[in-house]
Image (tube, rainbow, N blue to C red; front, side, top):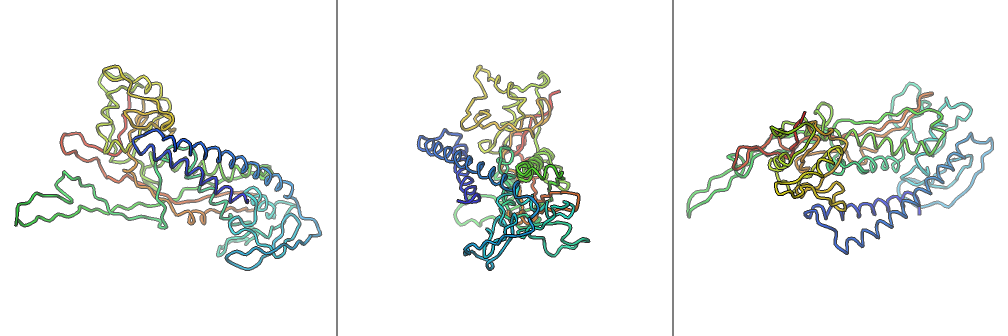
Length: 446
């Protein structure tokens, strides 16, 4: 079994684990059934074995690339291997580590490289400034239709599809609560134009329903539609690496996958919450749709009281769909919250919600929230009120390029993403004076 196939199977196992938990969370945060617990345990054991195998294969591949990342010997050995049928193109030949493979076909998704570390090492030695080790690996593919002053000698090469997909998977996965909370829809466009309707069933605009007596003429109504455009802006990671780092294949693999993806993931998730809409998504904290609940008159600084939580819950549109987002600094305060009858308001429910539940809704701790006492340290958010988009995986992969320019070793990843709240402003309720929104936060308590 190849490393790529094993990774795909591990992704599928992890997806099954996540889907079961999400199903339980969406079903009123229930506990897993006995059958689900059994299936969960089996998948966890499978994922552990798959992860261990992947780690061992990557370590072996990294060690092999270190041994092979040397100047080619003067004489080259030719080895003929059986051709493997595959779609797209004829039988190919390529050279690697001083051995020429004839009638061989590299795998179509990884460009013939065992891992990202091996690919980076090949690009390094294809750089004319690498000294006596200069040698262009036949597996490297340069971008086409690109105008450069120095031509291919500048060392610009396309990252194989499998390694681009690794960046995508790590960017839109991982352990960032925000990236699992706001899931952008993939699109092929650089801008998405939708139709918004912020009317309510009890309002005077939009589609209305009427009572009617027999033979009375019906009163027509129509939707109150307004265009809503979401631009997808560029977000990138641009990394400069030293020769010493590039000689250390395992560290290069970490740099090109985990670290770059983590940086993109953090910046993108932060924009869902705090973006100002200028060349980036419009986050709900900067949106006119935000409702900020004021502190109580006698409330001391840097505290959370039960009245704060109750008032935030009351201002939410569809609170059963919402979750609490909080900075970890607020945890000690939440654990002490009680109602007038001295009953706890926050409950531990670590299996379904690692942060417990507050008024029955899960608490997600994230560093994107401000520290205790600042506006936004505690937020009540309905993710259905936020519209996010990203370029399709293949488009994103095509925009990622790895290139060398003589003594400068540079790595760059670029993708497009955008987002904004669905409602332009809070809505008025059917009864009462307090408006409601998908985004309710606790105001500053200085």
